[in-house]
Image (cartoon, rainbow, N blue to C red; front, side, top):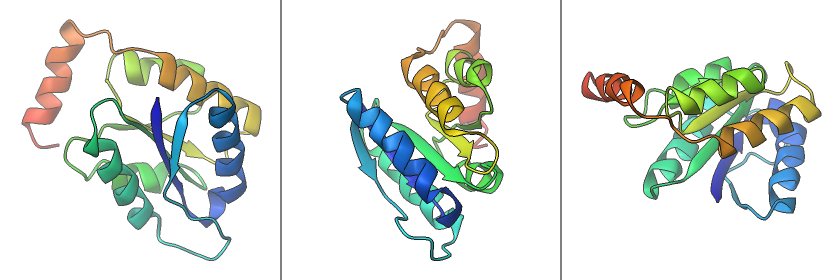
Length: 145
C-alpha cells in the first residue's frame, strides 16, 4: 500500500517511528516532511499530504502535529479529503469503517509510539463498510464540506 505521511516540527521523531514501522511491513511510504525541528506551518504539510492522497485511488495519508487537531482541520479544507483525528484503535477503525476516512491525524504530544503504531495499523487495514454509510459519506462530498 502507498501511504503519504507528513508532519510539522512537533512530529518529526514520531513520524520517523511510524515510517519505520510501515516500511518494515512492506508499505511504500512517501514522506512530505518536515524532517527538522525548525518551525513549519502545519497547514502547508496538510495540503501536501492531501493533494498526494488524492493523486491515486487507494492512497491513504497520515498527518502529525503536536495534538493532531490543527493539521486535521487544515487537511479537511481540501475537497475530497476526510481526515479523522484518532486517539485509539476504535476511533481509527470507525473512521475507515463508517466514514471512509482517507487520512488519519495523530497527535505526537498526545499518544505514544506503540499506540500510534496500533492506530495506524488499524486504520490502514480496515475497509470501508459502505451501505448506509456510503449514503452519508456521499452527503459529505455533495455539500462541499
